[in-house]
Length: 464
Image 1 (cartoon, rainbow, N blue to C red):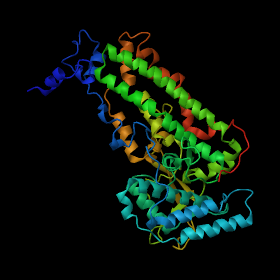
Image 2 (image 1 turned 60 degrees about the vertical axis):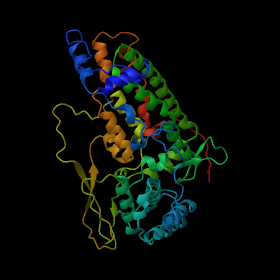
Image 3 (image 1 turned 90 degrees about the vertical axis):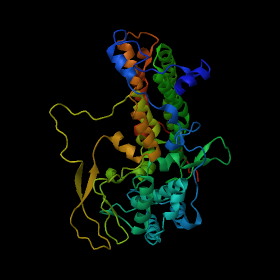
Image 4 (image 1 turned 120 degrees about the horizontal axis):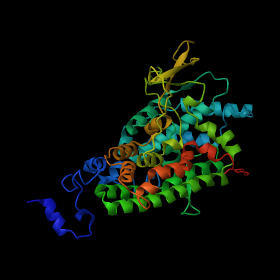
């Protein structure tokens, strides 16, 4: 029996699955359909049945944000990490290269770093039983890492990460397929709770400075993620209509693209509002330096393994620190709208001869007895946004790959419709190209969030 025909007969006529699937057999002949549009519609469509599935950790209510508050504290077996992190927060540690740091503050930081060095190497095996606990473990260890690195005095020639921190951080990072460094998910996606005073608002779990400015900065991204849920829904609807790709579907895609343009404008407005709660002086002087990765500084980070030997990352040394360029929502827009951020080289300019470049740095002096010869730190190459995908949660990366796998991208459908005679009121008149040209550039500032705060000025106070 032809089950597909049986389904067509039993479903209500208006049901989406009752519509005849576009295929070469159901299309008009190539003589009646432009060849480029015929070829496009003959290609297999994107499977949209799992766009919000558990496999991708994308929730229909909260998007890329978890639908429930993240774990705020690890089980007792790993409390030592939690205690060390809380000690750093309570001590109000200062940046080691701050021009106004006092000697007693330098001593306080050194004492705290000794606590990190003296931590026992905790096993992470049982953390594998809970994805949520693994995320919390990465968050805690990565925040400790950045506190540890950036409290070093300005005259330090390199930063030696002790094995008590290196071993568990690398193990947890391997489980999550993330770099061993602070990421966007550690500062935004998994760093919040509902406010006890007002459950309709969010609070950050961990902050470097304890200022309202820092919290507002992180939560602005969180609210953008939540507001982007509508955009994800519209993207899925567009892909659903591309499955059919008839004249009715094209009109619906037109409507969805108009709505998507409005959503992106609202997200841009949310981004603009960051200046209302984030003083640029506080951000640039007190917050942003804590977020720096190894490739933003001049000192190499030397990670020691359980044998006090330096860890060799090979060509996979990704230590860039958190950036809104790691937002899966933003990359989702890129894929859907067909925005290509690949760097364009002038004609005649060749490609680099290797996958990364090496920058010499003075070596670290440490207990392993390494000499004073120059240490070369691998600098990752490639486009910034392309590299930032490695910092996304692995399920979200799978979602991006799923979107990229479609043979019927919306931008291509819009372009083909335009060349086939689509006029005003069709996707060609307000499609992805137009959104990218007129609205999308505002969204691009999300990749450089610090720039969004430059024009906001207000006094600040500590929140904790």
